[in-house]
Length: 205
Image (cartoon, rainbow, N blue to C red):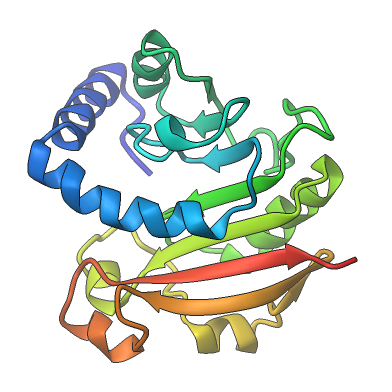
């Protein structure tokens, strides 16, 4: 999802970290992260595509962040966070480097929209979460304006898209909620770029 050259990766990582530390951005981001934290089960969590680590830094002890950019991983590890380089394609999204029985929740924020085969990716990741014993999955994707703002986005995920692709039940997980945030109306996303859809899945007993 980003240029693979080391120079670009390093520059991108530095810029992402710089932006994440801006006081106003941190305040706004906290509002969104508070919502995510209220949706996950208490306990160690897997943050897939942890980016600049804003969520990872607030997750319970024992949580881990997976990130494709090694420069971001290095920076986060220097701050004492358990961030690990993860090439999802080479691992076929199986989360093979993680140990079963350690994690309660799985979060994936603003990642699914970047794939051409998002239903296939979800099945693979949800299956991996089941193997690991994860009980809650929280997936966050942008609304319409946010989706249109980035040329690297490939799949526009909506409530209807989830239903039409048969993903209300997925690899032993049931979709408990599909809410838009901060206002639970899809149409808000037509004009507000920071509008999101939160999908909360719970493992079926």
